Length: 67
Image (cartoon, rainbow, N blue to C red; front, side, top):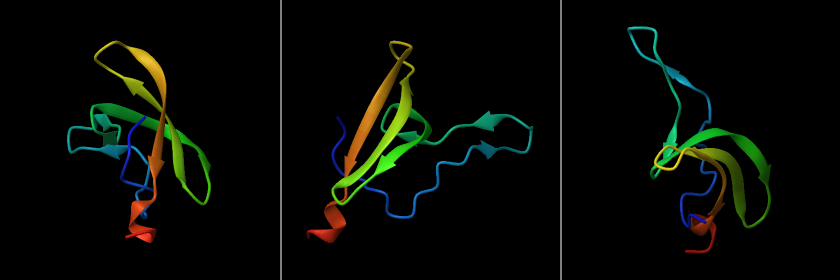
């Protein structure tokens, strides 16, 4: 579980560099695949941990609304 970040207008669209390579957005060491859900407490993303090559769920909390 990753704390912090929240949805805060962050796009989960892939980025394409000048060479045409697709670069997925990162949250910490995790590559974001897509958004799974959003609620009052935060956002859950489908991601991949490249270090162990596994699919993970990444839960973020919308702390900016509280503080």
